Length: 70
Image (cartoon, rainbow, N blue to C red; front, top):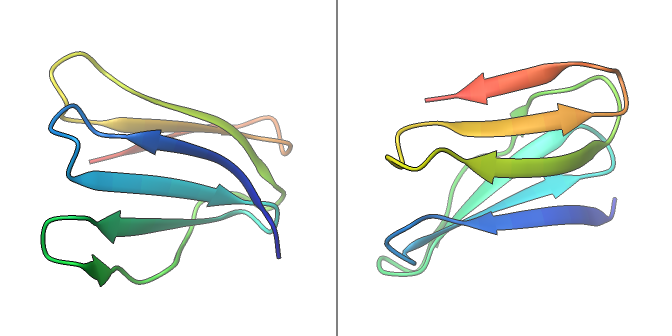
């Protein structure tokens, strides 16, 4: 399993990591914790971004789907 992409939230406290197996993981830099892995795509996560209000994370996978995370 390899990390393909990452995104940092607007408060610089959460790092989102997208993997080649379609899973997403979160790292809380303030609490020093790693969240559970969440399945978001059937294939690799290739890109991600956060909207300007920091409410949603968007991921795009090799499966051709865009996933919205809240």
